[in-house]
Every structure is written in structure tokens, then in C-alpha cells.
Image (cartoon, rainbow, N blue to C red; front, side, top):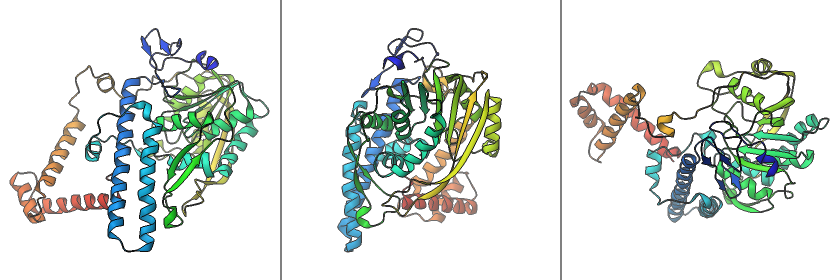
Length: 447
């Protein structure tokens, strides 16, 4: 880790770290299973991920029980095959996840409903196991896809092999690993915020095999509904390959630390303004260094103005100190699991840009305000909080009225009596609310 230690900076204040210690902030950054956790609030994020890990385990237990219960009730041979596969798969995956993340330390578990009520699950793009398909693609059945990404990028870098590079938002890590093995830089850093992915990559790159269960989205048969896989890397990672847990918007590095910064499927999915991320990338690069974008330019933000296209991204790069900007595009299979009927072809863009000017530094990215992150200031009475409190009270009232005896009309009369809504409107509103609740229960989204 000596080469990595030379460029590490505190994600809070930006000063150089000494053996993972910041003299300015007086904080020691921890290491879990050999992976440094270089985030602004290590205890907070550890607690956050531990809760989400525990919620994932509770979810697996719930699914396993549901599959066993359904298995006891069915007489169908085909259903028995599918449900048996799922029940066994959930059990194995529960043990595997529990073992893989054991260094986080489980607290006393609560029931699944408690975790759901507290919304411990992240949005889909950030969940603990949201990138399961990528894990199996990278380290089990996806050599064709992985090789295509590797070959495209390595061909760009081969004429000028980097001495140092970082992959921001590395996911399951196969691209970072492959490029390090083929290009042979002195230092490659795989940066990812999800501990499931960082700990898995650390073990695989170190030569371990890991057994996990894959649940294909559209399994090719009942027996393939849950598939036990052995994940492994082609070889132990060459010297200089490092894995860290960190936030791509607060990268823990000194300025001008890398020859190459690679962002695979990151710029368009991360919850950050692209201009700010490009400024961070610029700061990480040495003069003359290169940024490589790799992905589908698939921006799906809530604000229409933020759903930029490739031409706009190229303009932003030029505005952030980059030149010699070129891009290529190719159609390629994406997450095309051989045991699933679900797969797709994506048009994947690879863009390379050279840093020629220093960009104006972005303001320090802050995921959470201090009154949440530090917990010392009063929680503000935001208008949005007051509105949500009212919504929550109404939802709680509706749920409290469900006693197996009242009809929709009865419940609407109570709403009118409490001066919340006229009876006719209340009946329609309650009906819509219950339809949504029923749909979520049927689809499993409540989990």
C-alpha cells in the first residue's frame, strides 16, 4: 500500500493522510477486511451499511419462509421445482452474505417491517445487492462482455501506458482488475462506496473463491431460479492493485495523483451534477492526464434539464479543462446471463479526453447536512417535514381503520368526521391508497 499511501488525502479536509490518520481532523480511518474506508463519516456509514445489510438478511429470511410456505401448499411438479430452488437459494445466500460482511458486526436484529419503516434500503442504484447481476457477470459468466469493455479501453491506453490510474465507481471491479493486469501500472485503485462490492473484490483479487447464489431475472427453467455460483478471478491481482471504499464525489486523493481516471457507468447514474463530477476528475488528474468515460449516456434525473445527451457531455468536458476529446460507440450485449431469458443490447459510448487546464474546484460535496451527519445541531422544522408528517398521520389513520369489519364507506365517514376530507372524496382517495398498497404487496416492492 506504500504507493497508495503517498497520494491519500482526508475526505473531510483534503490534507495528506499519514498511515490513514488525518492530523487536521484528528481522525483515524478504519480498515475492514483489508479495505480502507475513506469516507467523511466512517462510523456513520458503517452503521448505515450495517443496517442495510441486516435488512437484506431479513429480506432473504422472509423470502425463504414465503417460498417454503408456498412449497407446502403446492401440488404442481413445476412449481415444486421452482420453489425448492428458491428456498434453498435464499438460505445459501443468507449464509454467504452473513459471512462475507461479518467484519461489520451484526447488531440485535429487528423485524423486517422495522427496517422498511425506517427506509434502511437505499434507492435501487445504491442498494447493498442491487448490482448482483454485475457481480456474476464480472466474475462468473460474463467474459465476453468484460473483455469487450477491457479491449476498448486498453486499446486507447496502450500507446501511452499509465503509471497510475483510478476507476471511480468501480462496481464489482472486473474492469479495474483487467486493466491493471494488462497495462501493468505501478498503481491501480478500484474505488467503490458499496462494502459488499469492495470486500468481494478484495477477496477475489487476492485469489479466493467465493460461493454466492444468483437469482436470474427471467430464469430459463424452474431449476435455474436460484443458481449456486463459484466466483473467481483468472489470477491473483498483480502488485499495485488497491481496493478502497470511498465516495466518488469526495475522492480521498491529493490533487494530480493519477495519469488516468476511468468512470464506467458512473457519470449518468451518480446523484451529482455532472459539471461538479468533471471538476473532481480534473483535480485528480496530472497535467496531460486522461479521463475515460465508458457507459450508455443514460441520464434519468428527476429534472428534465439534467438529462443531458452525449453532445452536452462533450461540451461540459471542454468547459472543465479537457481537450482532444474523442468518442466511439458500439453495440454490445449487457448483463446477458446465459441462464436467463432477460438480456439486452446497449449502445456503449467510450470517450477519452486530455486534461490541459485546471478546472475551478468544485465545492466540497456534501451528501447530508451537518444536523444529520454530526447530530449536534437542532433538526430544522422544514416545510417538507411538516407536509410529510401530515401525510404519515393520514396513512396511519387509514391503516388503523382496517380491522376486518369496516368497509370503504365506513372508513370514509371517519375521515369526514375528523374533518380531513369530504366523505365522497375520502372514499375515492382511500380506494386509491389501498390499491397501491395491494399492488406493492403483490409485486414485492414493499420489501
